[in-house]
Length: 317
Image (cartoon, rainbow, N blue to C red):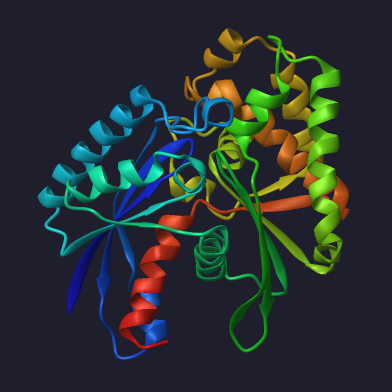
């Protein structure tokens, strides 16, 4: 039985759509291996802009998200999906008017759910376990716009999420809090690094993870820059390994540029150029703190995790 599902991820920084085809097989493993990406698109909508400052989602950002989602619903109908589900994350968790946005999204025909940081971490874990298939215990770093999840996964006879934490910082919040000049000053980046380290001290035992795996637009963009992949091709990025030295090199190079200079680089989206420095600092600081020399990059994230979760539910797992 073929089943098409559309998954929408309403994040703090971007709004993404994934349409997948599920080909029902006799076993769970066979069905998971049959999942096919039919259509994928993302748009930087910066829903969390000025959220820390005001406590509210801005009207301009709300309208941009709703406009994007209307387009996604039309695309989903063209692909004849059986259901459209959605997940909202940190920005809607934090905003005083987050529930209002969710109600407007539901009116578009999207079965939207506000998830906790722990639920977000679990979806990232599923995407990583079945998308990368690590051969040993692993740690997932899922960097978003308003939150960053760290997940410790165990590899036994299968995969098990052992523990997770969701820190309330991401590329939007860190950029707004620490970067006050263009280009950013070294002291600003050091203050950001110190802030991140204080949070990482709470999960020092994650150092035992053998393989570190990175998710999010920053780390996939770094692969595109390092491997000269433009236009962006998911299959060429997924599973690539970045060394800590290359991440350090890109941090030094991009943080010495002005915003306009970063925007002129084809592989960096205009809006991502505003916050990519903070994203690189997150990964560079984490690898330094945990003593790791490289990170595997996954182009699968929350949306893929949601599809996998749906398959597992149908098999009553």
